[in-house]
Image 1 (cartoon, one colour):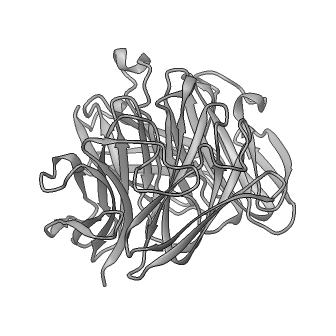
Image 2: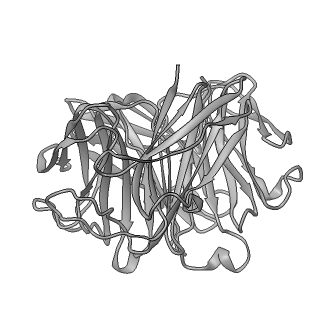
Length: 444
């Protein structure tokens, strides 16, 4: 049986234009610039995966279908979309179909902005997004919603304030099969500047959703991208929490999906504890620089475990003073094997780092196996502790490496996040957003 992933692709000479604040349209909103996409598919199975992919326009018309291709067990396939000569400039949604379990990560960027997210395999009729902004200290949001069915669907976006009240609604009717629609919150009636909201997205059929947070004014070119949530849990894990760690900081947003007040506790890897009551359907931001956590290159990186009496979801936004920006979503559970479709060592000046959190009850060993067969092991990672695999330091990887990896834990469940950045030489201090972040995929 074919397994499908749903992706959103922006290619070639695409100029991002702010959409109408009240009605979604076919122009992708976000920072201005010429954007292109690349995506990597990783085969998570022990057998050869036979795959293909299609791109769809906003009318649901399949404008490109790839030839079939095979991915070796544990291997990956990289596609740079602007190199597809038969595909015209524009924004597209996509569907990847394979006969084995696969994962995929999409990177979309320009010379000054970039965002990354994991392709969606588990679609749903209801999605939750912790952040929704209209000029929130120079940040706006949008949602790109794909119809994941073979029939038309209607879509509704509800914007919710911190008291749990719906303050604005956006809708689209008759969205064609596999097509996408853009919902832009900038200037949306009912939203106030410098006020944080959350969102609930529903459809009359299954949807796939991608969210963007993008800057304007002093934050211009910063782009955060992620896939929102179809459900929550009573616990969430976030492997990367930073307080001036090599100049990087984080903000942790927790959204309450329950019908009652959520009593939320955040326990950091250092042992620091924060608590907060969050109203139903609303969200709260735990800003790391205000947390009291240690700072600096040796102490400023930790993890967090979030618990609640109501179902919650967690989103982490990363940034630094050089305009870098990225998002990743928290995990409801871990696994002993995690797949990472994209790892790089000085690939067109990009490097990756992989941070894994031990979410078990005892210490564990973690081993990373790269697609070129190189391996590295870190031992005795304590419960709630983290291990960092920094690819530029890996002697088994050649410069120019662009591949995939699998991390295994010897005894305890783990969760992992990968950051991609141009962080060496003069590019490390260049003011532009070339930071991308994505969540590792639990093995089937």
